[in-house]
Length: 251
Length: 251
DNA sequence: CGTACCTTTGACGGCTGTCAAAGGAAGTGG
DNA sequence: CCACTTCCTTTGACAGCCGTCAAAGGTACG
Image (tube, rainbow over all chains, first blue to last red; front, top):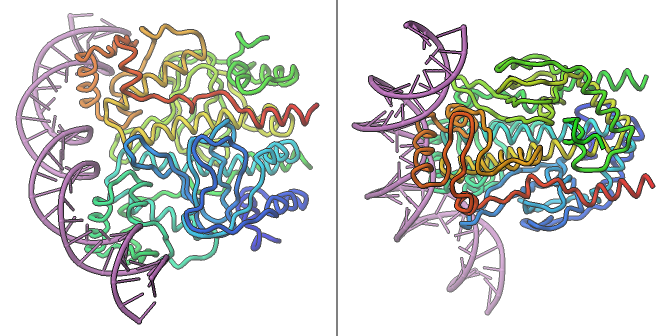
């Protein structure tokens, strides 16, 4: 198993077991690897859709600029994630994508996706699963934005992010890396800096968590989970029916 | 061209030109066709994911129940739409799906999607495009929910829905069918009935639009478009790069 | 003709945004 | 190594959009 060393394999390998051929195809996508400084742009709004990126290390994000000068962060992307799937089937990007930290990313042409579709049902299905997980996070975020308070939303995002990090490598729950500023947290969740700050101060006073500059410290795990009423099904890697059917079909 | 008579063909045929074989496969999915009364359930939350539905006529919607008894409508689905794509790669449904009007739907096993993936690159790519359009609507709705007023959100939803209807059959802009109650509008947009009502009353006073029980009457098209600052790119059917590449590859 | 659903209206309160300003932390260049 | 700039965090006052609660008037369907 090369799962430990290949970012994309440990992502797409979560949903199905992949053949050696599939695995080497994925490894091929990781050849063209660049190291990026913080804030470097992967693409800009209105650019033609041409490239996809696999994050090897570091964090990235995609955002939209609003008319009034605000921006809204749509995706927060971690190592193993494919950046650009959202816009894949559109002619032009609607978002801009940037690194959120320094890191390394692999670049490949979006046409390779057609090769995947043409070449491997298992990979295609995995890709669908990855897209669906990303969509599910967005759905959840929308529901949170509409029905829950700033406090709930912040807690939810922190738990969700922790769970995602934990899938990459076991992460200490009580202390984990989170490179977003308060302003960015606001841009993800649709809150003003001022209100994010007030809410974080309140969470700290209540002994639930502390946001330090580059990491989160969880003080009361239980209250965090119960008060958010967190249900992580939408992050699940399972895909019973379809995976099974594909296996039978190939046998 | 059978585009006029097959709901699914006129949907998935938008993004790519499909071979005769692809077209007949899609027609095969529409054989098992049922007529449904208003409010009938297609699936419920926690059900195993097993079936997909193509709406032949009528409207449907998917929703989630919140703890406090509220519900949130996630997708509003029109003829030609495939109901269930959101949950396709998950083991269990998180949403419930119901008819919003009476209508007819075709039912097929979610496994047919694997057959599509295995059998036709063009269909698979079309499917990806359809999923991306649905995701784009959701993204837009999230941005609206976070940054825009109730007034903006309502206007945006009405314009978006009109554009979708217009892709099915030319629809008079000044008067079109919209079977959602004010309560449901609220459940889609994350607003209370009371506030939806107040806002609609205001839009009527301002001479912009009138929501009648089952249809919308547009009074001032220009103000509706400009005030919403509507940018419909996210509904675009174009998919230049990939479609072209697939064509070349097959040639 | 009655019942259930949908729409409408009013009063009140709170969460969150806006405006404004200052204090820390970090990185840069001389 | 220090001065300077830039970015990030923190705090206060105030306002408004929208939710909550409550009740009544319309409309459709059996």
